[in-house]
Length: 218
Image 1 (tube, rainbow, N blue to C red):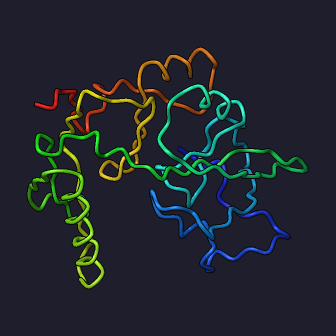
Image 2 (image 1 turned 30 degrees about the vertical axis):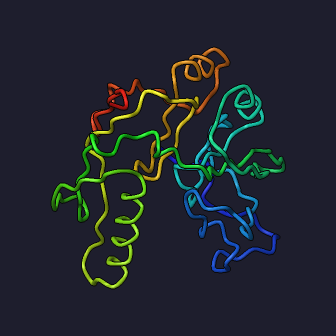
């Protein structure tokens, strides 16, 4: 998908090389001193309710006031919200930047789920995790190994995700499944009813890269 914004608006004191740059945003880590700059709408981009910006990861959302108001009616994991301005010609369009800081990986039954270790796009081996804490520990060690290695970085890729049956939120973001936002049917229906634009809703069973399963704790 072509991003809605990829350039910073001129005439603002902002450097992408400084510590406050939005390029330094880390998934599920509080923003603290991060500053969100003003962007320029890319040519021919549509003013959707959900938009994409180069440098802002898929685990975060850039949403319109309309979608922000709709989210207020649903249960979302803990997040931080900042104003985000995009210039389109002489007009300033207001959006909200939603940065999730509460991953919901505890909703995953890691013992029954399946992951692969991959190097680039090549599978290296399968790996087992006992719980989210075990995933966090092994993931931290993998990141450290990547930093000191001169080879292509390795990562964990989920093959099968088994959820516990006590899902309490309407929207889910995960450390172990980066790049995907999962919503329940209630929120999906609300997005359709309210004609929210910029959103592609895919039934979870139609997502072919990962098998998703809902199971009991036992």
